[in-house]
Image 1 (cartoon, rainbow, N blue to C red):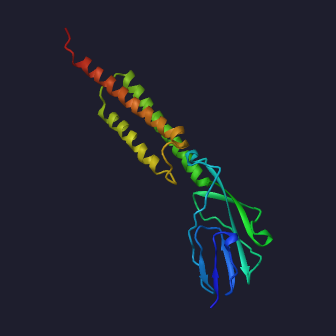
Image 2 (image 1 turned 90 degrees about the vertical axis):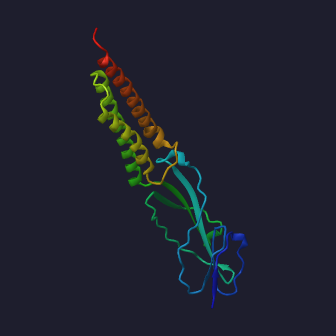
Image 3 (image 1 turned 45 degrees about the vertical axis):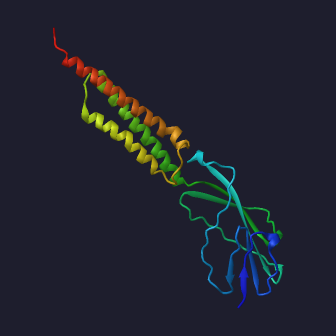
Length: 215
């Protein structure tokens, strides 16, 4: 039975006396028996030129490479790259190979997918629309001196807490402090909270004035 294995670095790859030698850049070696069906493996790679705080407009760059040896000699490698991640769109470009002409290296540029970007922008629009709705309702209640309208207060309070759950459903679970928060979420929460406080204060004043006895 022939044996086929991979090594983490090109310089550590040694001649295999049992058959083909396949190498990939990874911290741990992968070994497969000859004629064995290769299974999918999750490989962690480092990305650069990007920050998660820029979500959903963050972009990254990285690279991958493969090489193969047969009886101690490098053999040509042909690679077909495809992307199955719904959160990212990936563009691949040929890059200089560390193993020379026999190896294959790709430079990868990652950006958020169009569907994710569209949905996140939609979330921002909804947050601002809800904040504007609460602001108009607060203006109406305070200028008309409607008093404590409990249905309106309940709706405002529910909107305040519902936005937090809505924000946590953003694809990819972005951390607090990203562009999504600074462009929409934090401002919408601030506007709704201030409107709720203003309506309560104005409503209490109106209710107290109505309850004062007429002299």
